[in-house]
Image 1 (cartoon, rainbow, N blue to C red):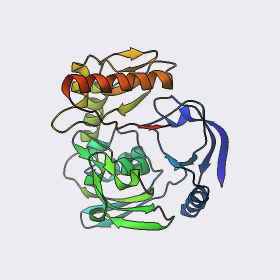
Image 2 (cartoon, one colour):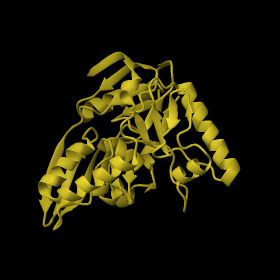
Image 3 (cartoon, rainbow, N blue to C red):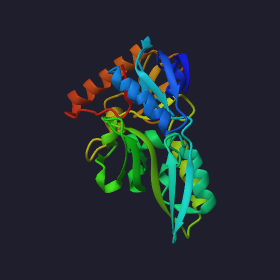
Length: 287
């Protein structure tokens, strides 16, 4: 199996903060994923899947967890059923690849997800979403490895999921998903272009960022609460909340994990004291 040692984990986080991994595995198929997960289970070591890194941050120092990249899991197959298309995509398939496919075939249902810098595995695991849509709106089924290192396939209705949350965050390694999209009578390419322009205008995509830092509380918005609490544009060292969107963490240059933790803890404490709301992190921190 392909692997590399002494890996700079900054390269696996879009915020570009983190220490080093002793080893990162790059399995090329399900058999190799099973192999590395079984070894990790036998050694009672934590498994950290690595995708595009848009919602993950690593602590400083040397990390000895079992890091498994989905980069080589790239199978992408399409079948047609009437005016619907089923897209089977392995965990390492990027949203960019799916966007190109839906534009080519003029399929609707993926427009609001089109700008998310994600791969299928990570998006399924966290039920990624944007602008009122989420990946589970179009999921048909998910193929994964369970806690007993067995491959299983579950239909959408058999899976536990909610806003930015699924059962796979606690147990299971996502291998692939089948997505259901339908032919559109609209100009999907134009809709995606319009959506991306709106996204680029509202979000700080010119700097390293994780995307949304916190989940929106019920009937409220994390960005609004952070702004009211005075955290829009606030920095500690080279890490800050964007002046464009208060719920976006950004790295202004040489951001450190220590400054990041201080900023998050200060923000969470301040919002709770002012509004009685406990912000729940959407970003995953590996410590």
